[in-house]
Image 1 (cartoon, one colour):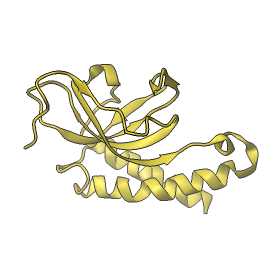
Image 2: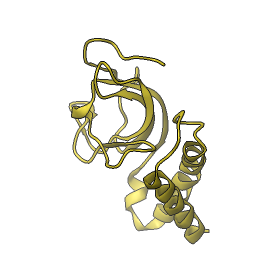
Image 3: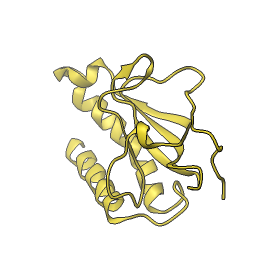
Amino acid sequence: MKMPPQNRTLITPPEGWEPESWYQVEVSFNRNNPVHRALLFTGFLHDGQPGNYHYLTSSGWEELSKLDELHYLSPLKQLGRLTKADYEEDGALERLRTLLEKLLPYAEAAVASELFGGGCGPQMEEDLELIREAKELLE
C-alpha cells in the first residue's frame, strides 16, 4: 500500500495541465490515507492550474471532490481533451463519440477493479451505464 508524502504535494504534469481534459491521477486526502487512483477533469485553468468546473471522481466515492480537498495529487496520464469543436454544432457529436470511445475502456476497467484496485460503488456502475448509453445513442 503506497502512502503519500508527509507534506501536502500537488504535482503538475511536466507539460502542464491541459484545459477541459481528463487525467488518470493518484490521490490521497490526508497523510494517513493510502494513495489510490481517480479521474480528474481539469475544467478551465486558472494560472495554469485546474480552476472553475474541475472535479475528481473514483469508484466508491459518494460525491465528486475538488483539488483543495487533497493532500496528494500526481498525474499518471492524460486520457482525453475537449476542444473548440466540442462546442460547435459541426463535429460536436463526432468528438463526443470519440471521447466516449476513449473513456469507456477506463470506466469498464474501473468497474472491473483493474483501474482503482478495489471494488466499485453503485455510482461508478451508474456512470459506466451512462457512458455506454450515450455511446449507443451516438452510433
